[in-house]
Length: 239
Image 1 (cartoon, rainbow, N blue to C red):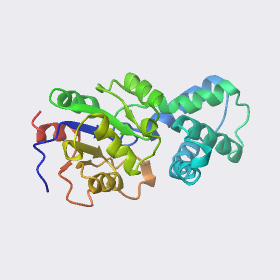
Image 2: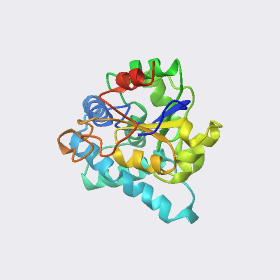
Image 3: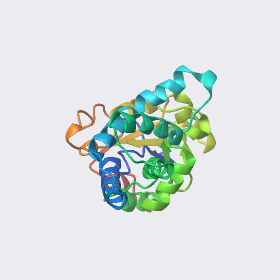
Image 4: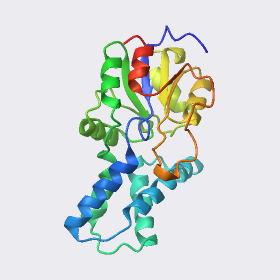
């Protein structure tokens, strides 16, 4: 493990690391659909939606000539395909918009806000997420996450794990890569960040995918910090 004494900023993966996207969406859509009289297997839709997440970003990478698409747009495109696949009937344009913006209304894990609040006293804290700026801003307000600023893939027009995202975050903060720590519940995110010189912190979220979780139950490398939650990260960082 390397020295972390030079770290000035911590940047956070959001989906799964800071927020419980799966439970949030299923609960939200289940409650909402009762008021609309719409019947659907929301658990299957949410799991299916997340399952096509990586592929939707790969399409952006494969076709740069089409221009960058923000995550809200990718979510909407994926949703329309899933609604047809699951034969969900009776959805209006307003309904589709409500469902798409469900990703703006995700609840934080129990330790997220308290841990971030501790870290904020000493360090710059920001998301570094594939979510677009509006999504991350609205989610931060909804969940009470006390970010200093919003760092989004949208700013760099590159989705993680593209190098431009990690290096772009350090550049905007006027910091060297080694002065930035990436915090994530996903080993592959940390692997990409470490390759570029960022420090790393892992926190397991073993219920992120519910019963479908197949990996990231534990750290798979000697990350600078391996912690049970954000409060332990704060303690390890001297907060």
